[in-house]
Length: 147
Length: 148
Image 1 (cartoon, rainbow over the protein chains, first blue to last red):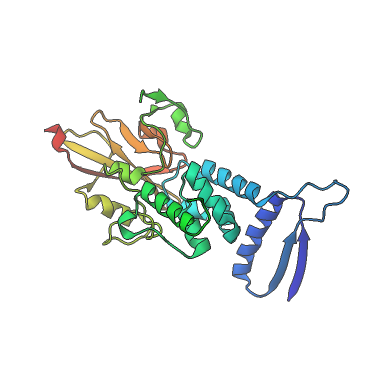
Image 2 (cartoon, rainbow over the protein chains, first blue to last red):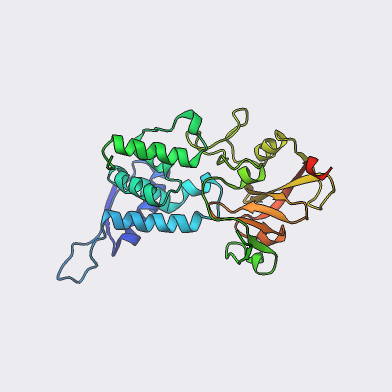
């Protein structure tokens, strides 16, 4: 088994590399062991790490801009930035819910993939406002949002 | 909303062809809902947990299935996009062998589309051809009682 570490200059490069390696892993499972990390900051010369909320915001805005003219949920949910939002995992759930409060978009599927939960009843399927409210109610019940 | 002529980079022909906004932007419904005149839903054969799609149709991104959803609403495949008195037409777009968009013909021969999560637009068929949606490859029509 090959094991290697790649140091990258910034979060954007890190994100793209993670995406590439994830695809590679699907084709060559268990043959590669990899780690991508940004270098330790020294003497202020390296760029500061961006916070989770900044990474989420960058992915969200790029995804929104690039998929806005599309009707296809297939295209929306396979967009690299949408996949990156999912990869942020549970820590991103409060950020997603707060974004849904001010700028509702099709983030339902990301929440489903991250949490494994779905608060949308069958009678609300396809009804954007109702699905948004179902998820926001779920967020309040779980303590992610203020009641 | 007053009509506003714009250009969208995703549709290069919108620089040359009629393309005007007719609604505010919203992600609540999409092009299929707008073509079916049922904008209370977002229609797509995507995740069954969230997106409306007829139960008796496969959730499959294929032209055959997209034709079926319009056929279930009284449309039949026809030869072209030309205006025919007494009929309402639908154009289904395809890119990379997958359906991407549907537009509905207006009584004056122009077309109306919902652009993803953006606005409704009134346009010529050429205005949105050759861009992000690819081209219109299937046309359907049904009798339009409003014309009688």
